[in-house]
Amino acid sequence: MPDQIHLGIIGASPTVGWAHRAHLPAVPAAVAFELTAACTTRMETATESATRYGARMAFDDYRNMLQHREIDAVAVVIRVPAHYDITKDAINAGKHVFTEWPLGRTTEEARELAALAREKGVRTIVGLQSRAAPAVMHMKELVDTGYVGEILSCSLRQIGSGVLSRDSGRTWQREVELGANTLTISAGHAIDALRFVVGDFARVSAKLTTQVPQWHETDTDVMVDVTSPDNILVNGTLENGAIASIHVASIPWAGKGLTMEIYGRDGTLKATSGGSTNVGSVKLEGAQGTDDLIEIDIPAHHTYVSEETPKGPPFNVGQMYDQFGKGIQGKDSSYPDFDTAVELHVLIDAIRQSSDEGREIDVSAG
Image (tube, rainbow, N blue to C red; front, top):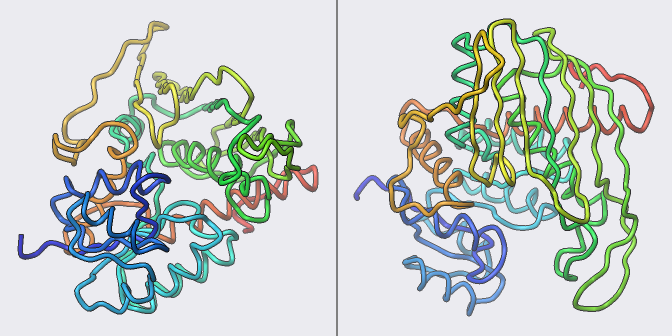
C-alpha cells in the first residue's frame, strides 16, 4: 500500500516483553502501518523479530534507526526509565511517536515531551489502551448520550494477583522512583478508563500503602526490599459533582479483576473484566428504571481492527494503531496523545501528594 506509514518498534524482543505480547502481533493487521524495522539491543534478536514479523530492517541501536529516512514513526516499547531519552530523540528526529504508558518517570518528563512534540509538529499517542477497548468506548458513548442521566457516583475496583514473587528481570519495578508500579500502571490504566468515561477529577483524597514490603526473586532465591505501593485507595469528587471511590491492589492470590460502576439518576452501567480494561475482555451491563442489569451488546462501529488481529493484548494495541494511523494521515481520529498523558500524570501526582500529606488535594492546582 503506497501510503502506508513505515514503523519501527524499539524494544522489539521476539520472546519477552510488551512488544512481544502486544505490538508485534498487532502491527501486521494494522492497515495504515508497515512494520519496517525492529530494534533491540542485540542484532540477533532484532533480526529474529524482523524475520518473524516481516520487517525489512533490523537495528541494535535505536539512534541508527531514527536516522533512517524511510522510518516515519516509531513505537517506544521499553522499560519506563528509558522512555524519556528515547522518545525525546525520536521527536527531535521528526518521527511520529507511540510511547507506552507511563510516558515518563515523572510529570516533568511527560510535560517536556508533550511540549517538544507540539514544537516539532509530530503526532503522538500514549499507550492508554482502555480508551481503545470497544466496551469502554461504548460505555462512554452511553454516558455521553444520557443512558444514566446525571451521574451521581461511580466506583472502581481492580484487584490483581501475583505480588509475592517474580523473576529478577522484573524486580526493578520494586523501586518507586523508577515509575512503573501498581499506582502508575495498574491504577493508572484503570483510573484513566474511569475518567475517560465519566470525566476528570476535581479533588482527591488518597491512601497508598506497601502491604508486601519484600518480593522473592524466583531465579536468584533472594528477598528484595520494595518501596512501590501495592494498594491504592482513592475517594474523589469529579468536575461534574459526582463522587468516586477507587481501590486498586496487587495481592498474593486470587485477584478478582475489575469492576467499574456508574450510577446516575436514570440508570446504571457496570463494566467487568477478569483482568483489566486495557488488556482483557470487558463485559458491559446496564439498567434503566429497574434494578435488573442486562448485558449490553457492543456495536460494531467501536471495532477498528481487522478480523486477523489476535485477541488479548494485541487487540486494543491494534485499535490504537488504527487511531494513530488515521491521525498521522490527517483523517478524523480521537486518541490519547502526550497531552492526555500529562493530565494523567498530574492526577497521579495529586493522589500521591494526598497520601503523603494526609489531606484532600485540588487536582486542578497541578
